[in-house]
Amino acid sequence: MSLGEHLRELRKRLMIALGAVALALIPAWFAYPWLVDFLNAPYCEAQRALDPEATCRFLETNVLDPFTLRMKVAGWGAVILAMPVILWQIWRFIAPGLYRRERRYAIAFVGSGTLLFALGAALAYVTLTRATEFLIGVAGTEVEVRAGIGNFTRLALLMMVSFGVGFQFPVVMVTLQGVGIVTPQRLSSWRRAAIMAIVVLAAGITPSGDPFSLFALAIPMYLLYELSILIGRLMLRRRTKREQAGQSPHAQEQ
Image (cartoon, rainbow, N blue to C red):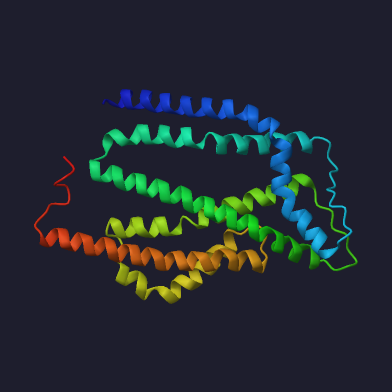
């Protein structure tokens, strides 16, 4: 395909993806009450854990914020609903330029990346209650904390996105090993430095800044770091066996 044909193909895929998001915006708009209840449930649980008689009511001082909040929540919900179509359009655009073995790897990386993002977002949601308890309790009993619904919803979304991005760490490590930039042995020798880097990274991308969220993200990231080393060793072993058998890495790709 020429450059112009590639650009037209890209435009076609983008239009289909945007159309899917626009259609998904309709059910997401009407699902807004459920989505907000889901996102703000940790706040209510934290309030009642500190005070069983708490009313769990938000305080909003700007009359424009509720509409803006509904648009943002509905927009994120529409992206999530349209994600299968978006991923399919990305795949349809890049698949023709890949060999057969590269297609298998691409499917594995996209699938594992999606699963890890979902696991990270779920962990952030579970951790958010304890994080909110800490953030409210640290103010002391003399201060009544009344969060704005938009502020807490934004915090919940940022936490879920941050944890989801953090859980992509092993995908990056496995990719670097796959292309030969680093080796499993080198990653093993970097364990102490990796622990410090992971803690600093987790502290940097955690929006709330509380210790519960920090360690809830840092500990799984280190375990995933060890998992990436294990996967790298398995990949290196398979590559060595293939080379010893005299097979070209692209022998079955044509």
